[in-house]
Amino acid sequence: MELAKIIKESVAYSDSKGDQRDFYNLVEYAAKTPKVKGQPPFLEIGTRRGGSALALLKIIEKMYPGTVLVTVDPYGNKPYDGKPWKYGGDFYTKMKDLLSGYENHVHYHMTSEDFIKIMDTVHYWSQGKEHSFSKFSFIFLDGSHLPETVTFEYKNLFPRLIKGGYMVIDNTDFYERHIQKFFSGESSCDFELINTKDQTIIKKLN
Ligand SMILES: C[S@@+](CC[C@H](N)C(=O)[O-])C[C@H]1O[C@@H](n2cnc3c(N)ncnc32)[C@H](O)[C@@H]1O
Image (cartoon, rainbow, N blue to C red; front, side, top):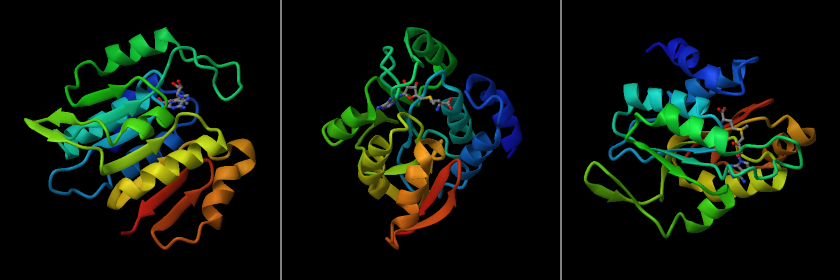
């Protein structure tokens, strides 16, 4: 499969435009997701304009047809990690336009903290069946980059990854590499740490 083509078609809608290495990692590891019966959803935290979600949907379309992509982002000009960036209505409508052709895309318009609180109380429907969020096939964390938020996401979401599945955490060089240090210090044999630089990539072993 042409991963380069998928990257070319979606990176223009991402904030990785200048440096595409992050996007290559995302696409490469998403495409390594093990195929399992009743494939659980892919999950993305932090969607912005929809570029990385588009790349994930294209991989799903080619390799895991019918599998759902769940995205979570509050938009609404929520102050972003104390920085001047705003992710408002404009990004939301552009994301909806970009991804509107994908019936298997489900968006939760809320923070990751709220999604994690409710994920065991809601279900989604796909291909005539009701499904829970007890497992995810692949997880991309690219919402808030505050260490405490990312740590909360990791602790609550990583245990739900399927065996052999990957979690990619973007921009872990932020905040004095706090997240990188966190993962390097973790001694669980539950995961293999593949990369801890600008992105942290972890494989679930069991
Ligand atoms: C870096 S952008 C995401 C870029 C996107 N993944 C891409 O590569 O195309 C970060 C996004 O995270 C969202 N965000 C901020 N805080 C969040 C939180 N607590 N939970 C989920 N999303 C959050 C912002 O609204 C923004 O749209």
